[in-house]
Image (cartoon, rainbow over all chains, first blue to last red; front, top):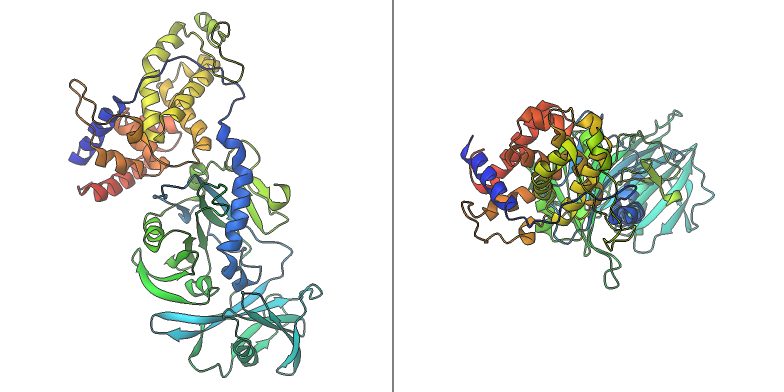
Length: 357
Length: 181
C-alpha cells in the first residue's frame, strides 16, 4: 500500500468513527422514495429549457434550430461529461440530451468573422435551409441580394438577419452584432450553389468586408443527440433565475461551436486551445478535446469558477454517464420537440419532452 | 428462513410514528446477526460516499429493508453487505441532487477518540471533491477494506472498471494532496 493509500484509509476510518450513531432499526420504507426525487424532472426540464435558451441562445442562432442534432460519438467512447467540481450553492445536477427536431430541415452553415488580435468578433452566420416553409418567418424590410428579393429582419437585441429564397433553398445571413450593413455585405458576398441534393448546397464567399474571413466551413449537422450536464442553484423569491452551469459536448468543430457568439478570445484550457466566450451575465469556454469532440461550458459564475469546473471534467462512456446521473439504460426516442430531458430519478421512463412536463 | 419471519413486521403501536414515518422493526435470526454486525459499517461507508449522514441513514435502512425481503437469496452471497452497499448507493443517487459533500460539517473532526487519530481533513475534502462514481469505489476499497473483486461484485461493475476508477481517483487525490499516487 502506498503512502497515499494509507493516508486515505486512515482518514476514512478516523472520519467514520466520528460519525454520530443513530438508533438502529429497519424502516418500513415500502414504496417510499426520497422526497427530493419528485420535484426533479419538472425542475430539470424547466431549467434545461431555460438554460438552453439562455446559454444556448447564441449557439441556437448558429445552426438555426438545427444545432441540437449533432453527433456525440458512439456510446462506447468516453465523451460524456462529468464535472468533478460543483459550486457550493448548486442544488441540482443532472444529465440530459439535446435532441434534434426531426421536423427541421437539414442545414449547411458557414461563419464569417472579423479577426482580432486574440480571437474574433462580429460573427456572421450563414445558414442554408432545404425546402423550408417560409410562411411563418417574421416580416421585415424588403431589399434585394444579388438580384433575389430578400428580407431584412431586426431581432430585438439579438442581431439582424437577411434571408432570401434561392431555388429550392432559403439562405439566412445573421449578423450577431446587429449591423444590417455587415449582414448585407456578407449576404452579397455569399455564393450558394444548390446541387439539388438533400443537404448538398455549397456556400463560398467573394469580396468579404475588410478584415473578415471565413472561420468555419459548411458542415452537415448530425442527427445524433449530444449530452448535456446542467447544474442549478437554489431558486427563491430573490433568485428567480438561479445560478447555473451547462456543459455540452458537440461534434461540431471548435469554430462552429463558438461562432454563434458575437466575439471570443483565445486562451489555453486543459492543454488545448480554447475560446473564452460570455457576456455580462455569464462566462463560458469552448475547446476541442479531440477533433469532433468539442466541449462548451457556460454559466453564471466567475471565470475562475467556470474554469475550475472545466478543468475538473471527466469524460466517461455513455453507460457510465447514465449510471452517474441515474438515467437508467432505457433507449431514448426522438421527441416531438427539440429539447429532451432525461428523467434523472430513474423511477419513470427515461425520456421526457417539453410537451409532457 | 423461519427465524426471519418476523423481520419486516412493523411495530407501529407505541412508536408515535405515523404511516409516513419510518417504523422500527426487530431483526432476528441470521439476518439479525448480519444486520447487527454490518449495518454500522455500511451506514458509515454510505455516509463517507455520499457525504450526507441523514441520507446515508435513509439509504442503509432502505437497503436493509429490501435485503429482508430478498434475504433468502442474498444470504448466500459471498458478501451480502456488498449488495446492501450497492442498493443503498443506487437508492440515494436519485436523492443526491444536492451534491455538496458535507461529511466534515456533520461530524466533529477534532473530537478525541481513544486510539483513533484525528482525520486528515485535507484528505476528506479531496475525497469529497471526487465524483460519487469514484468516491463509492474509494470508500469500499479503503474504508470497507474490500478487495477490488469484492468491490466489483458489490457495485456490479467489472474488476477492470474498479481498478480504472481507483487509479483515476488516486491520481486525482495524489495531485490534490501533493503525493505520488
